Image 1 (cartoon, helix red, strand yellow):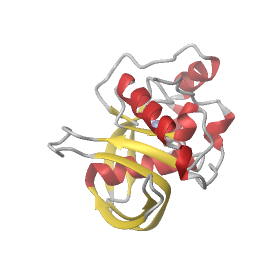
Image 2 (tube, rainbow, N blue to C red):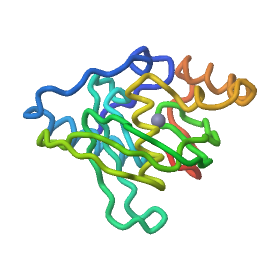
Image 3 (cartoon, helix red, strand yellow):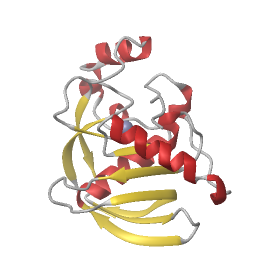
Length: 179
Ligand SMILES: [Zn+2]
């Protein structure tokens, strides 16, 4: 079942999310998060974007840049190391109508748990590394507007105000990848 996506201005998107401790009850939430992400044409979704205060997110970048099947669940993630530099236009399901070129490290070393609680540590680059960094930012209360210069942020003030007021709830333009 698709859930409602919460937008910029909601306090849950500004807090550091709690670690997952009980893995046995996650399955229905994960199903709903995938439904929500697909319905919104997103490629990633963090739990607090559907109002849930837990450190977990889902990603599906299958068929983008010929990634092949690439569906992921990351729980209690932590970026241990990162390097390189890349620019990419990002959209955000919690910031409809906003598109920003965001600079991020090109590769990361990422530690996380899967839905059974098993720990993994992996070196990741490309679009998956970018999507993970976008979602980890959400789980730490950070938006893409916090990752750009104040001049660039000024340029989207009008959109931010409209989103806060609830005037814009869904992006019309689907050109950028949203997560
Ligand atoms: Zn986002």
